[in-house]
Image (tube, rainbow, N blue to C red; front, side, top):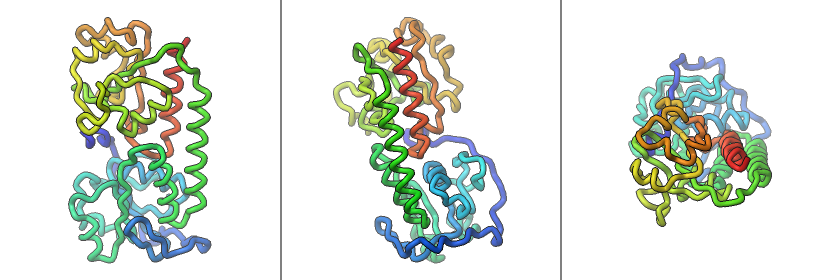
Length: 298
């Protein structure tokens, strides 16, 4: 199910040529150590195999240093999209871009060891478990690419924006519950997940918790009967782009027109990409949830 959160579309393009190397930032201080990886000098040819990292790299000003991104990294538009796979990375294909730094969200295939033979460093930026970890990755990616000040500024601004949105959202007169849909087979998220923590900032009750937020690693598969019985106040659909789900298709499911959320028009579609990434666009997700809570209170 975790892989379903990353099923996004991408377009192929040609690699940047050698003449497009980004000029080093003379004010950057290297070497820098991120976790167990020491980066000796500012990287000028970065390959990103993580959509979240790709978005963050461009947000901190490291875009000109990026020579290739994986097929799932569809934002921003100017990112050098390729057919590289983030789920089954091919060391030989990656090496063809002559990177001096490769960024991934996980390394279960021995990619780092394979690339190390060519002298290429691999930096693992795992899925953030909460907002604080996302902010920390903004800083770390800034440091790794010679844009530490920009990374710190991005983390501070993102935190501030989210705090302001949450503080400015009307507090529900009565507790609001929600169902968060990952796909049409009723996989959901609990409060123990990154997305569950974001929604938890608004004081919402997650019907998937069922007394144990750690159930199924935070990604339980519910049943239609359980969802109907819980009768959530709000429904968030994170399968609108991938699977064409919306208020109309949900209401057409057998028995679902009886849900309070359906009758009161509290079905909210989310951008699948934004809802599955721990990137600076978290602010857009938080704003969407704020709008939903505000609408439910009026």
